[in-house]
Length: 480
Image (tube, rainbow, N blue to C red; front, side):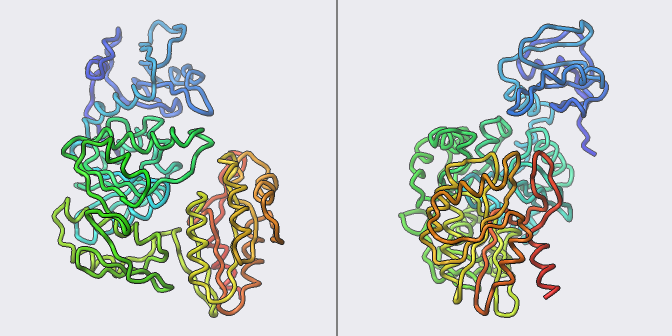
């Protein structure tokens, strides 16, 4: 139960520079979901991508909302406060900041930004701090985790009110460090607007979400803007090997700490090895070994190291932790049986898919099999690009379904097939595709199952049906 000290509407509106209203009621709840309204709520009618909050104003009022914040409309109820604004999302963010007593400023809030690696970096950091008994929380793609608690969320970065609610839980439970994945879409939708990040970690930048952002320039802008907003006393941990790193450094006033393996930087790593059992690298005259698999995980592991400098942690503590840390759920998880291996990974962007496949080729001593699909209602351009890349790969290919959403799964598969010039297996039902691929594995073969990671659903026409790649694989292994 989240306890928020009661506040009157005019007090909150004055802090948010919205002026005063006629009915100065005590606020029972601040929400943008009409279904959650109770007596004396403030309802903010968000004009979303799929639905317009204005449609739900009457429902909000019926459930007890006494103040409505919306774009200019005709007032239909004179007993209700109406506040008209130009940008409801921004207004909600400002209201939430004051309603939750500027809670982000009272915690160590660390954000992770980038196309790939956000989940792995934030999860490593979360477990590292808990390993040191520096109580932490993580908010991201795999859910929200803290002190033996786990909660599922719909988006990589939740809506702003959900974030503030969990930050309040952190404060109540004396959790001082919160690690949060920050997606480009959440930045564009003001879900992290005006939050007080003490540190931001930049992983990398490559093509993604163009169905939403339309252009790479706009996508990059949404990655950079949180760094622009950082205070001079905050920290920006930057992957210096990424080609956009200089642009980020140029536009932030924060204290920059750089890392990488190829460019001169503050934390220069040197690869020792990447193999089936894990990775190893040198940094700051220390040798690090990890059970993480994949060359790209060298960057993810190194990205966390500067936090030792910021929070006065001996580097040797990170050496000890990393040596025992197990791979992140749904990220390069390796399942071996009868001299055969399956790797499950969340890779769904073109760059991540390419890197995981290249790693599979490096690791596999037999024949490599790749099973993947593409999500529906997302970047159609990458489908053909993935198909073109698969032409260059010496592997058995299975094309199947991956969260088709509101598209026909076969239409998505055909978009991948357009650029493929060799024989591949097409099995629309993902469970059948996985079992068929497993059945055909021989000694020393590898199977890459890409796209869904540890997701426990299949998104079809707005409904999330129970489904798990992991369960399908383990069930098959147990029965064979």
